[in-house]
Each structure stands twice: as C-alpha cells, then as structure tokens.
Image (cartoon, rainbow, N blue to C red; front, side, top):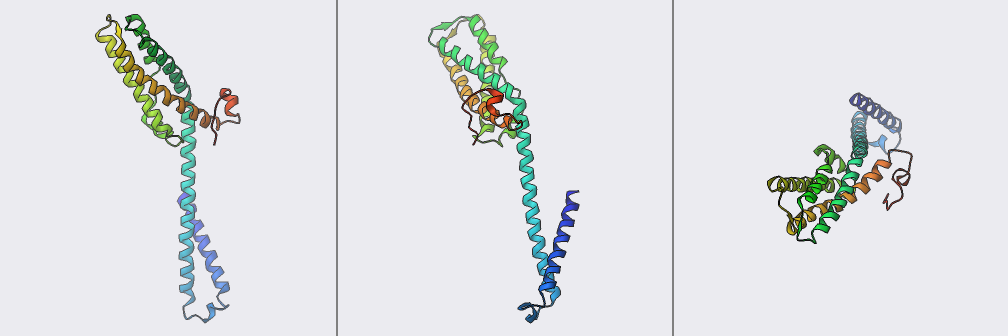
Amino acid sequence: MKDTLRCFVLMGFGIFIGYLAFLIWPFTPFSRTAKDWVDVLATFGTCAAALIALWLGLKQDQGRKSRELLRARLIASRLLPQFRFARDGARSLDAQLGFYDSFQKTEPQFFSRMVDTINAIRLDATTDDLVALAAFRNHVGYRAARAVGLIDLTAIRMNARLKSIPDIPFHEGQAHQFGELVSEADDLLRVVVAELEVQAATLTDLSTEELYGPGPYDTD
C-alpha cells in the first residue's frame, strides 16, 4: 500500500512539474534555447522525482523512529515495576553487605537471607527489551544491561557459596566482593529507573510527579 501511494505521489508530482514547465516554456530565456522541450520536461521530471523520493524516504525514516520510540516506551512501562523492585532490593542488600563487611564473619543464616534477596531481584529482561531501551538518553540500554549482568553474576556467586559451604560463616572479604558488585548495580539502577519513569509518563496525560510522586526528574 505504501509503495503504491509513493508511485502515485511521484507520478502526480512529475506531471505537475512537467505542466508547470510547459506553461513557462514560451517565455524567455527558455524560448531561445535550442533544446527540445521534451528533453527539458524529462529533466524537470527526473529532478522532481528524485526530490520527492528523498522527501518520502525522510518521512518514512521519521515514522520508523517514532514507532521505535513508542515501542521502547511501552517496554519501559512493562519493565519499570521490575527495575524499581530491583533498585530497592539492591539498595537494601548493599546496606546489609556494608554492615556485615565491618565484622570478621557473618553467620550462615544471615547470609542465606541475603541470598534470598539477590535471587528475588533478578531481572526478567530479554536482550530485545534492552535493545529497545537503547532508544532513550543517558545510555539507559547499556546501564540496564550491565545492571542485569551484575545482579545475575552476584546471584550466581552467592548461590554457589551457599551451596558449597552452607554451614561455614561468611567472611569479611567475601562481603566486600559481593558489596562492590551490588553497589555498582544499585548506582546503575537509580539512573535507569529515573529515565524509565520519565519515558513511561509520556504515554499518559499525567505528569511524572502525579504518577510516581515528587522527585528529581529531568524532562529535558
């Protein structure tokens, strides 16, 4: 349908330019040229077709980008609750790991609870979802992908530690290692959630503050 419409537009524009050239042909300086008027009309038509094709191409590209942005915002709306939950969980876990890092060792039952926390905040975001988020500013796609990777890596390592030696106390150095991963994920998730909230809010008539409460939102 789009190709058919493009053909009709090109034909109509070419006919219009040809007719316009035919009207102005009797006037100078065209009347003094030795060129056949058919050649002149063909030249006008070719130029007109090229210009309109370029315009249609730009129009279609603009429409494609608009659809991609709309798709990204819909995906952001779907992922936003997960990312907010993961951000809050990572913040809590980072505080716990920082607290236990000051001790020489941590009892297994406390470590088991932290493993439950890291398992609960693992994000169910596909690669296609993360690619879609790359349409947003602040490198949200990259930040989201890295946050997902860091949380998955921390969960794998903590689960492996709990499974291999479940009854041995959790030592200070291990808390520091896990804490660095979780802390970076927390920082990334803060930026991602802030941007997703702004983008998701554009799909409604409500402001970002009305949807999510007061906060430092950058809407530029």
